[in-house]
Image (tube, rainbow, N blue to C red; front, side, top):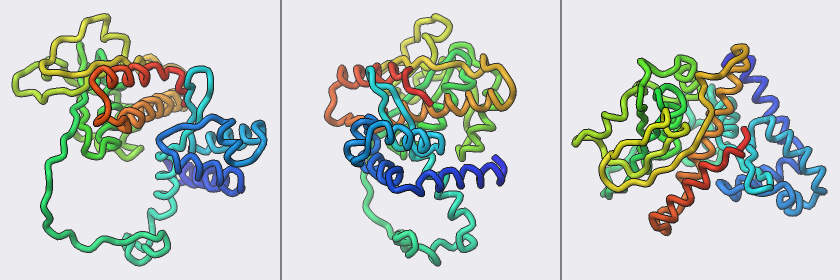
Length: 289
């Protein structure tokens, strides 16, 4: 993304917040994140008419600060952390020539001192395997996203039943542009995860309609399965701009599903309840970008 595009997005983002009702709505959605709220609920809590709030929500959505999802028959709105991260990154990228200690007080943050050795404890992490036929796009995006969203609590892996030679170049380019580490991303067979020395999976999630109509093999161990059908970027057509737009929408779909997934209260759910929640996430085909 060029500097001119970043400036344009930043102006639109900051401009969308330069209005009392929209600022109040955004602060409300941030306060309940990762939950989403209906437009009517937001309007009531911000004390404005429903139709007026719908207009404001549309502006915030176009600015990339909130996203919308369909739950049942209602449309709900949720803060989009990626949008805020992008705004803050633009604002402070050149801050003090890389010396944040000079301006930490502006953001009311504390610059930590050099870390001291402390006693550490093992924290369990969930292993998640994303499957797609060619392991070249959807599953690659999911693997990269989970590594960032999971914050050490989740480890992402991906594979395919008939892997391509390499991931789609436009997928790798987009992930790099969005700040992901792509060095270890590559297309591979799901047979790698059937080996005795392979990491044991806690979750296996198919991102297409059962890869090539096949039945997923037994990967060993006790794991929860789910299907989250998503459009295949290899089938995207149109101009380069149109394909990039569709790829951005797919990225947002996967990100929102993973944000919901990683925020589940696993410690209070039994195996069947977790399976039910994963199936519900897969049903958010109704989630719009």
